[in-house]
Image (tube, rainbow, N blue to C red; front, side, top):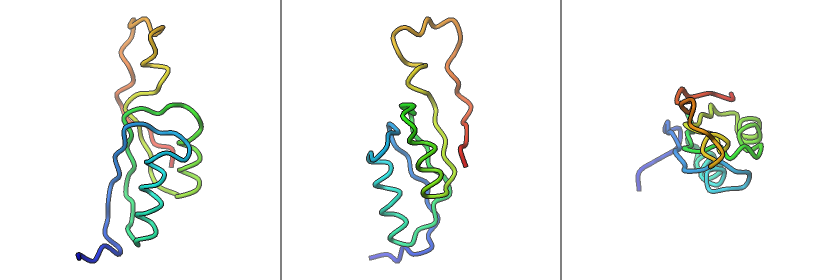
Length: 88
């Protein structure tokens, strides 16, 4: 197996929620000794996971969309926020 200790990685997930698969991936990467440069998720479900993960794992965190931008009641009068936001 390849030595992964101190390897720089980015983690990409589909949705961000407390205790979800993105959090598990971050935890496993940290335990393996990897240095997480960036965590990116497609949808921040706005459940406080971004702040929790940023505080707990001290890594840069970004998202493409928020859940409120993708809800059906979103009227489409303005484009979703595509620029990445970091919480670190």
